Image 1 (cartoon, rainbow, N blue to C red):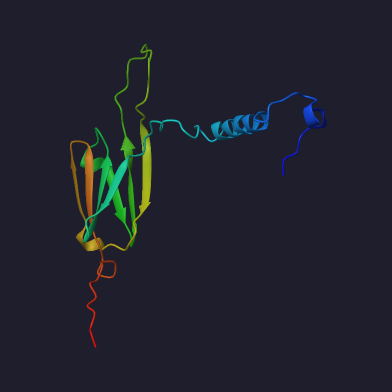
Image 2 (cartoon, helix red, strand yellow; image 1 turned 120 degrees about the vertical axis):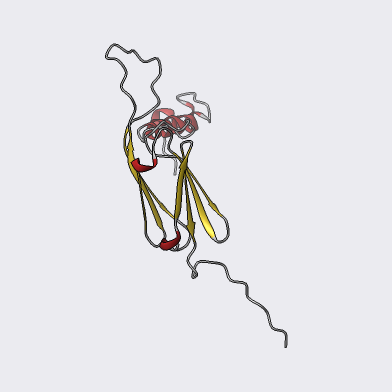
Length: 154
């Protein structure tokens, strides 16, 4: 239900029929700005790693961007269907007199937990880190692997 102020009822304010829609749009923009970023804004730089997760059929392959980090600086833990990555990204300090034109690289502790679509076998996990990309291969458990069912004809 749309309520209007009496001063705008009908035609006293000489407003366009789209004024109410414009007011609602402005209010939605104001509310979404309070959430940290607008609805259509670009993602902000952050400490957490960006990830791609693919399903290879027999395994899930997780690739996370961790530029400048070494393998011993990253912690990986796995449960039935959850992968957790954590660590701390360190960036060399600039001189005290440095004035930034733009500062997008963040430093600090990060933790990222991802729930996978199926259970994984924790005994066969492989992880490698090369050129700033962490690759984790998570073999599916036998329960989670797709099964081919044969159809019998009568």
